[in-house]
Length: 384
Image (cartoon, rainbow, N blue to C red; front, top):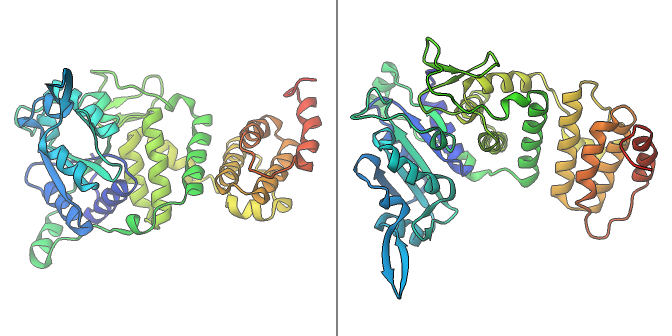
């Protein structure tokens, strides 16, 4: 496990909650994980419900079957009713690694869909969990891979000097910037396009299901046939779900102006350290133009020569144009695609298909589309 600064992890926790991504804090007993989550709820003035996994049964999450009016209903527990009534709040699942596999399985739907029995928790109810490493937990269990993949994993730091300063002058409070500055839709789509461009280059990292017992000497698990490594023992691993979470977190970090180390921690927590290392290194050298600036002046656009950069910038431009939903940006995006088609018709075709399917009301067929047709036909990408 990497040791992070407590302020970095606190900011990462707050951004993950603001983005609606379920989060798990890993750390030794008695190190203040619960206090940090409670402090976040108090800073937001949100209600918090603490549910301890070791003293719960599967029915506490799946609902207790009750016959009513000739029908069987799954009655949720009181804590779920309180959160549903409040309309917002934090559901804090504590001591997650002390929950036996049957209880972990029942938690899956709660974490992913926020459904408890027959009650759906409101969208403004966010899920945070805490866990001790299994070797430090009483009767500890590793997290099952399906549950681990539904969470962003953050390692809770323990630093003697920081603890001393906290005892003397008070511990740091969570930053709430992510709640004050949520990402606009085009920023979310841009982040998704960036992740998609990376997976075009490294498709093997789209899904790497952990295999039991395939551990290296430092406790990490090797990615099959890849040479990269990933944290084992119920940590994050790459899947379409966790890459989608990484894209949400990227957008939230950009909107909040979070420092790079916060993004690093969140991406590693979502997809695992091996996949995150590759992605963040690729991202550092990507150097993409701002898609909003490209749409503002499409005639000045020059398509990057590298295929992954070309794919990333075109998908980002289309994402911003689609999110804007106006004729002006839709037309500008066609000009960009038409220029791209001269040197990269295959990449331009993918972008054109997306853009054509999201035509805004009142938009006419642009001249750039007519220019694009013979280029794609000559490349064999359109029928006669």
